[in-house]
Image (tube, rainbow over all chains, first blue to last red; front, side, top):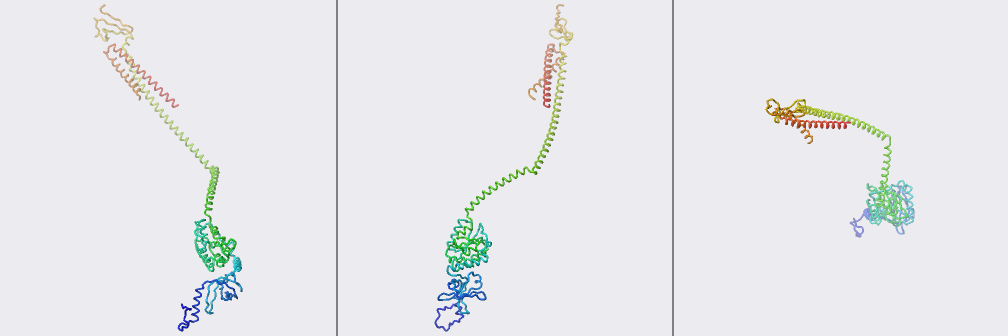
Length: 427
Length: 73
């Protein structure tokens, strides 16, 4: 790049054309002033046939030509009038054909508190008329989010407060931070970019945008239209937590819920684990009670059922079965009795047979004895004497034959009643 | 069979056996008178013993039969 400020006064070799000079200036100016905030008084604002807004910003000693393209002008809630004190934001541009520079205004707002309030009211009315604040547009806040996206400054106290509160209250939830400036000219575009980024993430269930307290000017980024529209278009529920208790910002109206402070936003976003534990205990007790009640109810139902017709039928069937069983038992008993009777008969027959055989044996023995007894009686040596016969004894011996009788010796004649001695010597 | 039953049976059978022997001796021709009388007395005694045993047996059989009848009734 040619150093324009260190050229020799007369260098016939290096002479710049107007275009070259303008090109060099364009590069230098546009690179250096890519985004600026300029305060001044609006002069001669005009809207061209194409819808672009042209005006001059001036103060006591200087003036700056400005243009706001139609696309930006249409989305602008506040349009300045001649003499309005405003703050314009955007890059500087060198317009070579006219050899002049101008500011391409991306956003503008009235300067000063009264003016800010006026701009706020204008935008609020515009968005309200569009229906961006309607209750039926608002998405419900999830009860137990697992991942929360946070749009705030990474260095601010607000993020640290949110983080600490979450750890104490509901450590199951994860937070993802998208750092964005929360004041200054870059704040609104950064915040809206962050919202759009999170809206495209599948796992983010809830979004918190916010910052700690400050003046209306400090909090102005949350009153910008681009932020409001990013919130309105966001796929996931948004909690706006701009740290002022009493005043509302535009983001509060568009968001699905509003929290007075970032800490309050976390309290709104997640349940308290201690409350949950107590609630779970209560639920367990209620459940136990309910189950017991249900059991009792079912017991009653069963009791009632026991008396119903179907069961009566079952009882009848059981009774029939019992009767059949009883009959079979009786049959079995009869059969058993018959068998026992048969056995008795058999035993009786056997015992009779035994008795008969014993009687027969006894008769045989008796008969044998009788036979012997009769023979003994018949063999009685004194039997002939009883019949009137006599017996002769000689020398103590019974003389049965005449051969044994000695006629020269004495003898005895034996009768049944007495014995008579016969002495041979007497003869 | 119990010991006493065995003894009774043995005594009865033995008595009958002895009675047979006594008869044989009595019926022989050369038996002396005194011995014949003694044998006769022994025979009568044995016969009485056998008769008693038979009566006892009859009684026992009758008792058993009566018991059996009572059980069946």
